[in-house]
Image: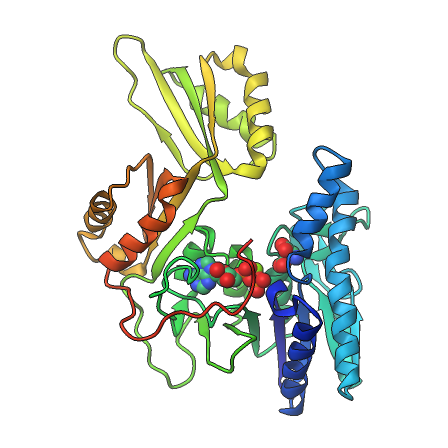
Length: 423
Ligand code: ADP
Ligand code: ASP
Ligand code: MG
């Protein structure tokens, strides 16, 4: 009997009706002869609401108690879903991440999974149950504290369980019909992608296409678990993410896979840095030691007259305060003039493996932005991606302009968004 792991995101279980609808789908998979393990997110915007609530009792909620609070969201949906399935006459049992054997490191709020020991889940499905697992959470190996995996982390729970249970496929059910060539909330003419390689999906995910979390794609690539991203609101085939196209469907790798945008980052500029060896090292050491991950970096040429230069970099807005504090502390040692913080930025990225072999992609990308009157502030590239930073207000216009310029607009269907608030 084959085993499938299905993950349902918050928008798919936003209310009682949603939970009942999802329960039916799960029961159908079971009736079709599969063993079914389900990973479920918190209902609708519950996680955001819990974060807001924590902010009302403490200025910067973080750490152990914050994780304890956030995991409550997924515990609500797992229990309700198990009840709804039982109501349809099928056996189901719900499990917290800890009970399901999701073992993590001790980094609260963005823990990494280090092991999965799914003995209880295996027993439960072997006894004929549908197992429902709370996503986005685990228990730390040292200290045995409850941890969360970072926003969107239920995707990672699902793939990690699929790998540990040797599942045939990991199905990610969401509020759109699959992975599109751009966010369907921004580009109505975005096209659904039938198949995309792990490599391109990884770049899209890390560039802001939140339909899949990049850690989940990384995990799937490492263990070679095919992912099927599809809607829980329709019966349509979605997008396969894998090493090779699935089954007999011969799908060619597109030159350009899609356009991603991300408005969750901020930009810090360190102004007036002496242009001598060791300065960049000191700046980024201070940032790294504060536990902040950075993304793009640009250093200007120093003005000959002053010998001073500016260094700009981007980072998650949520880490802005920490980074500024860390830099301020080392200001005397490093000897820069001032710091500028700007959180009104957007990152626009074009992704596609075909970039490696097709000259002119970069030029066409910049031309599209220039035709749309968009100013570029930072640029970074990888082998299969070009990213620029623009004003946040220009984000949607930029994505649409680039999408059209690369011939990605669909001339038939409009992309459907079935639910969610886009929060
Ligand atoms: P879930 O609650 O199911 O985890 P998310 O909100 O995390 O759902 O992810 C689904 C959303 O991702 C979609 O509603 C869509 O707005 C957004 N999205 C961004 N980029 C893309 C893309 N390239 N293709 C599909 N959806 C995308
Ligand atoms: N509920 C968590 C969040 O909103 C995890 C998830 O949905 O994947 O980030
Ligand atoms: Mg998600």
